[in-house]
Length: 302
Length: 302
Image 1 (cartoon, helix red, strand yellow):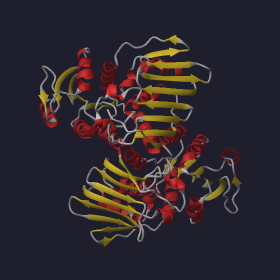
Image 2 (cartoon, one colour):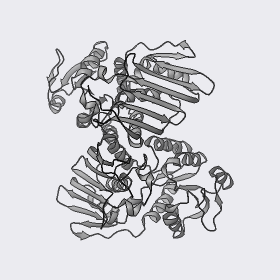
Image 3 (cartoon, chains in turn red, blue):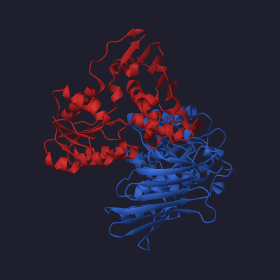
Image 4 (cartoon, each protein chain N blue to C red):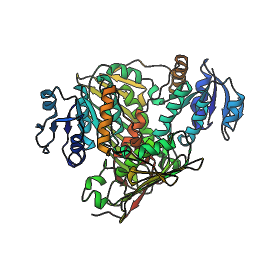
């Protein structure tokens, strides 16, 4: 299928373009970006021009930041194109619900992607937990913001989500593997005195599921979740979900990388004429931001 | 229909019980409350006992605070009873989505009520704006927290929502009357230095719709919204939506009060086998709490 990529920045170059290169399903037919381009691919700076001149491009993948994404997505859907959205799928929940409506009215596919759900061990964990009752669980998601987002002040501005930007990846995995949904009981957010978004968070969901998010972790970086079922099985997801250990036994995992797997899923959704817009990770973040007890943490400087 | 009221506090006594008294549709057959009762009505302190002993009570109306509401609502729905929820319908979005699923699986009606939508002028405003394009709008919702919630510290605790507790009433009207949905562009929240929730907020939605919420308004209290269409019509909702003035002409309005109108709608929903769970006001509040620029306001004391 012919696809257009919109927003040729770091994530497009690092992940989206290489994913297409390894797949026979996809041909990058156009790009839309203020400055970025892809070698050998016709490039546009104006979305409407690209849509008008490339009527055979049936799919558009949006790799833009969340804030401008709504207008681009709405224009593509109204032009009858199937749309893929990077995570998080929008700046607000209200706008993504509106995109769902527009996609339904236009009869096209909308896919709100969560790349961490495609980590290689997630499906094995989901299969292990299926039909079970989870008695407790813990998410330990701790990384160094200075290493992963050096000098990116926007992560601490409103909408940047702070430590909930990596945290939403953990929550996208949690909502995928749990056999029944949970909701927030309480949360504590620690926001640096000179910033707008949290740098550390402790979260308690129903079902005795807790999460610790920390953006000041030095040394080994930690992206793990562990779930214990009422019959004593322990499911341990390591390395951001890429390894799954059940009762101390390493499970065999998928072989596709996260982004190639997202594009394979998009192929299936378009062929089946379906959408996939599961906003539960974003809903949990909104619930945390709405309900949390807020504390002031020491000032953060790069 | 026989109905049980759960949570016999101020709102139940002031609004729910009198509404039932004026309607021939409803008979209060039981109450569940830690301490409150209704004269002449069998009272319970345990929900499960009430459900077990009153198999002919088909509808349960929950007037509890949001925090404990989920467990009560889930138990009633699973017991095959239709359920009405006071506003806001829950403490988290995630739990209300889960209630929707449970109601659907149980084949019963769930009604997430927004009493301000039943203010007498709202339908006239909605009719006037139908099919039009709104060019701009403003919500002016300013009241004195010391007058309406004297010494109620919980309104400033996490989950209390602060000035967005009255604000969500305004947003429930906005989402009802607007001919097409909007989403948040930006917000500023002003939170007293000794409190957790905002006392003042300025909000900008798409479509040039703005809102000012203030909980320190002395003198005349203000609950107004004004919408101007692209063809110059001005729709003015006054007195919390109870008066509707279109192009300076006072429109005739409904005669049912807010709570009697909610119960009339519940009768219709049950008869039609439908649910009504529009979470858009709560989604806007979550988006505001998630995206807002936060500023520290002077300490608030009663």
